[in-house]
Length: 196
Length: 196
Image (cartoon, rainbow over all chains, first blue to last red; front, side, top):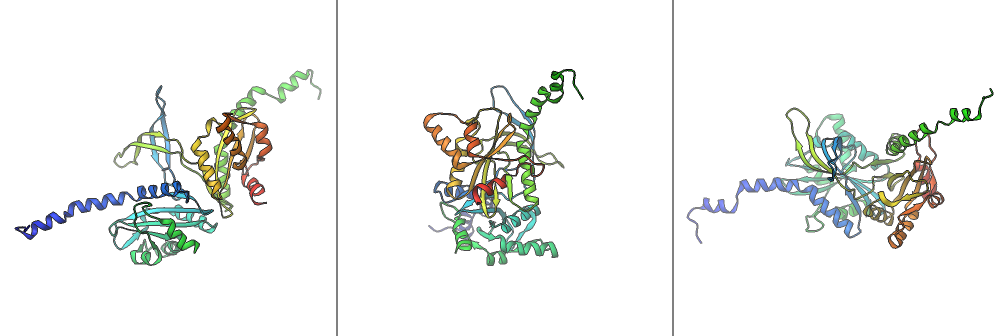
């Protein structure tokens, strides 16, 4: 079928506005994809890794009769550890998951200093520690070993450079292939980096 | 100094009513005592062990202008793991803390089946797993290795006996001395049971 105008055909094939909305939706799903991945690991007895609950300061709770307790006032607290931890091959695993819409840099803005110090302490005591970084625009997810991340962080504490370049992360990380299940098989990358 | 009546002397030395109130207050503080103990371990770089946040299902959040987000409707969720985990001497540590006012038995009523299955999975994968049990009336705190606990639990699944006797726990656990700081040095018991 021949289209009367090339412009129209382009409109049909690449609805840019929708596509940008989709990027946003994909960005929202890193946590869900990791939840599914961790459930797969649990089900197959490969590892026991959970996301910690969001820390909340509970101020008021109602106890309506015959109904379950209802929290009516609470506030989000700053987490003092990373979000994920658990056990794999007898080793303690600890990681944080972060995503950015930035194409060329991973800004430190969403990482709290005490989370990094928590990860440093775990690393020093023999834990396997890393950050899972998603560049949503590239649709790429990396396992970034803490060993490499912390060099940039410590430089930042000295020189104030508030990000790591995409190129550095690409060079120092393991790209996680996107699969159906597990969605991001990050333990394969852990095997590669920490066990081989 | 000679007391006119033996009874009076007893009254002075053992104010029973107050003592029972104190028992109750002490019973409330197991979690706080463990928080302080864990903070001591963190500060002295001996271990990195945290209580997980209480899992909450957030239903509604208000964002008042210029103020921080306020959660206005949320519900408690049943935890799917144990409350405490972390890293000690390169090993994964996982435990639950429970207290009972029962003098002669530790009832299973407050332990969820999926928490036990979580602990079993951690134990099977090489983690150090235990329950810290407080008998508030005896003012005694025990480190009860999962290895022993699970025999009673599995018997319960078979015979329906819904508790472990105080005598069994006393025989199969390590009593934790109460100190000023750390309040309950449970890692000394971990050393004794798992590292010696």
